[in-house]
Amino acid sequence: MSILPKVIFVVLLGLVLAGGALVLEGQSSAAAVPGAAPAVQGEAPVLEEAPLAPEADRLRELVDLRTDTSKTYELADGKREWVGYLEPVHFKDASGAYREIDNSLVKDPATLDGVDYTYRNGANAYTVRFAKETHPSRLARMELKGMALSFGLKGARSSEGVRTADTKSRVLSEETYGESLIIYPDALPGIDLVYQPRATGLKEFIVLRRPGTPNEFTFNLVLEGLSMKQAGGQLSFVDSEGHPVFRLGELAAFDGAEAWTNEVTYQVKESRDACQLTVSVARAYLDDPAREYPVVIDPTIDLWTPTADTYISSANPSTNYSSSSYLRTGRDSPYGIRRSFL
Image 1: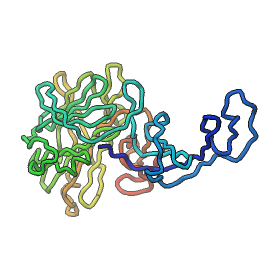
Image 2: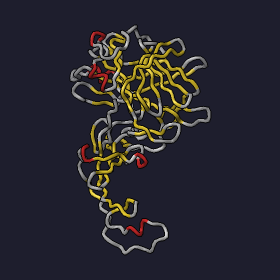
Image 3: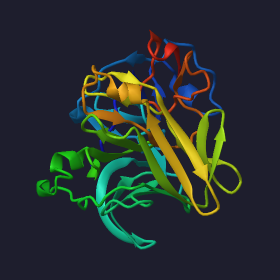
Image 4: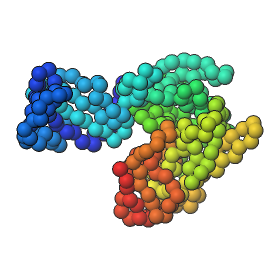
């Protein structure tokens, strides 16, 4: 089941068929033929913003024109429809061809390093696998090009196995499965762990269902072909040549009233035999009488990309917010002045 992200804009390109070649409307067909005489300049190509065309009007997708974040369709009236998305909808496979990203959960049992994994994401440049039960260091496993990052919550107690379309398990319903969520209920008393595969990485939600829960959570990490690197306020997981592969995204928390805070920090501890990542949220935020539970702590493990949309904050000038689901601008607490960049 492929769920496309929000469309940001749609453009219609007026096209006419000339000598077997598609050319922009207003452009001479001769101009589309190499070596032909220069065309007389006509009207500008048709380029208009438009609502999505009904699927019945789409003859086919022009697969060769795919990009990470766009699709192009041939319409029944001879025009082309270009659709852009906020997040990637395609990834390149081993052959270099663009394939559709599928963030749904696929049952694919596998045993790796003695851990039973039950589900993985459908299709993407990376694979993420989820353990049948909570595990102190291998609850989730992200794989890319022979490298892997596994992690689990330290001190987690045994949670029911992940079952899809089985409401009796209290883990997943059919509806939740369609939304690509995996829930490990009561991994700690009063705390659920929720995971959501995304086009650009793995969302984790630490759900504090009631007041009085801990404000600090330590995850044991297992790195295969990777090492940790901290630079410029950013935690990355790099390959043997120092190239970033995964990174820890923006840390934030919010409550049931959507009161956000960025008073969420992390610390890393690395030794020859172990790696640990500790995520903490301000105790004052959790204990505020105005807090409406549940509170959700929202860390993300992202694929590293060389460029991305982002915003900056005057309160945290060294923080990279490119992994955020939002582009924020204006002035507010606790971020101060924020500016977005596309």
